[in-house]
Length: 127
Image (cartoon, rainbow, N blue to C red; front, side, top):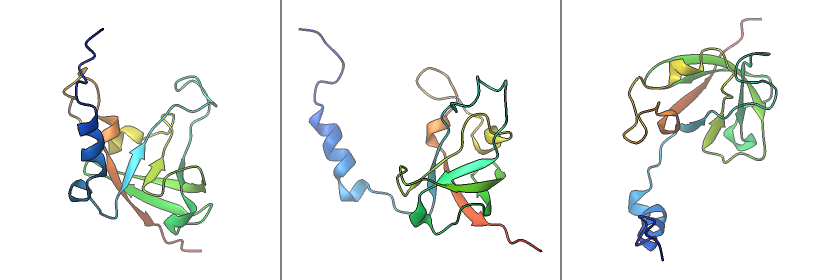
């Protein structure tokens, strides 16, 4: 036997599936994983945001991602593998940290990368 600090794991499931705890809005969860095309930031920078096709955006469209902390212009790439309420901007994207808060997390004293929600707005082209 060992103590893993998760004595009542069923309570977590109830919280996550409870409709009263579901927050619905038009914002997307910002995911910022490392890319497989670079080693940290040593190689090519990225300027893309991956979105689910049901988001209503098209491949190649220019969009503005806005969080409570800043905004960033990117180009859309559609990805069927994503959840419809998430967007992915890889960590080698120049300016990504503009979207993240300047506070530290309670656990581990690191950046709160997984707590960011963004709005997405199409940038009209003037061609």
